[in-house]
Length: 210
Image 1 (cartoon, rainbow, N blue to C red):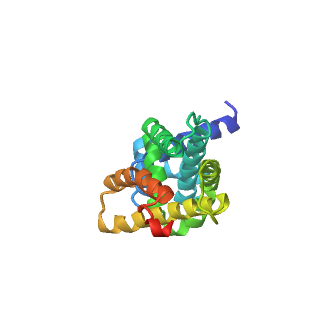
Image 2: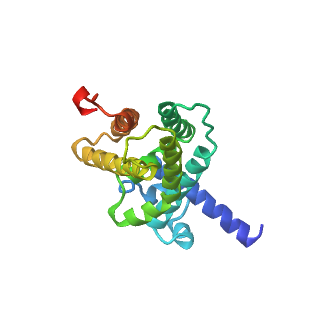
Image 3: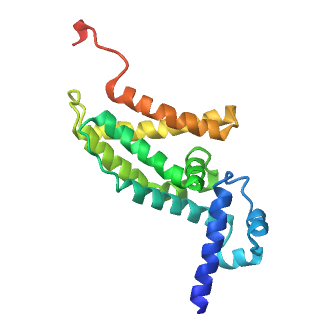
């Protein structure tokens, strides 16, 4: 076996082991020692191929987003109904995480519990996924009968801003309740409902306001 191939296989083994570790724990609680002990990998081998825990974590996060984005890009929208298509986006994401449960934990930890010193790099990593969502929002909003003065661009920006505010709200909620699994479940359950409210409002205008 050539040296390059051996190195590639070694790196892949380490990344797969790290994906399991980060896929079960937060960045803070994940441990290189556990990766080593449970996979018969020496710590020296890890540091020979990767700079540190941060680099290994970011590689796992990037794989998560790359594979999720690739999956989402294959989504076929068969309905003209905006509400149904929004539901389709969320269901396709849930379907991906059902198939790859470790990525689910990595994804939501990167959004809801990101390590502070890596926030900028995590934002760069998720940019392609965010751009995919933005393109979908533009297409969906473009099919709606928008209020006067609200452009497709402006409405799309509202949705992207809402997404960030929504995630920020749940980051604060984690400080109140350490049950991460429940937090993620609530995040996904409420997201569809709140997107619907944002698009269609919560009140019917009085006749005098029309």
